[in-house]
Length: 345
Image 1: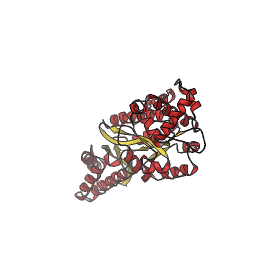
Image 2 (image 1 turned 120 degrees about the vertical axis):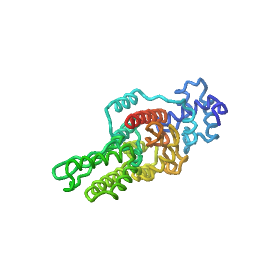
Image 3 (image 1 turned 90 degrees about the horizontal axis):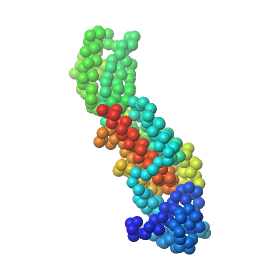
Image 4 (image 1 turned 60 degrees about the vertical axis):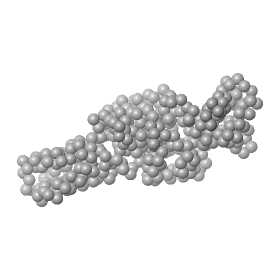
């Protein structure tokens, strides 16, 4: 039902119920709405609107309480009626601006900090999916002599760094080693991690014994970067905040959500399912996972240029501060996109 079909007053009453229930966790009655909204109508008129909204499925009437609480459909109607963009509180805006004002070159380290940032400014749990290691480009490789060994250093374009110590082959003098370093760099520069691994394995197959050991070591490093670079990895922050929301959730629901956050594959599947637009809001039964948890998730992708490379989100009760959370997630995703694009440039 559209806002025009519902009528302006029903929309205002629904908004008041959602905002008051999010604030207090208590069923909302007509007197409270009359005091807080300034609609200029009697409590009796508001009671009629509450009854109508309940009949439409947007509110429920718990037990014998005179007040109402929003249903999942009510939260969805509230979210869909919000103006585009949304507003953050000044404290949220300053916290996000201050975090991204720092010089940061490793995107995964930034994401770890981002989960703590989002958790702090929203007071809910936050999640992030880093870019897949397979898609990161190789920025440079170096062979550094350290005593009797060699340090093989690989740097990804988004700041991922990996290294391994290998024995220096006696057959390679300084000139041969420098030539091998150039050959390795030329083969893998600006290739993705997965492409670089394939290239070094191919080079190892046709190289001398001494060179084969270097190329094989490089292939192992690329394999480690590919496996550990975020393809099946979720960063989580502020889980303890969920315990503070127990007033809005049953204890069993909180327990199930804690367990879900500990299972990366389940959370990764959820984020892939729900992060389909620039900003996605999934409420309760709209997804099997969030329905089981009686939770909502607000998520957004971030990009390097036009390529989507990861996602960030906030997980909380269906009685969530949607306005602040949506604005915060949108702002953080935008800042991450700017940073990722700059690191890829």
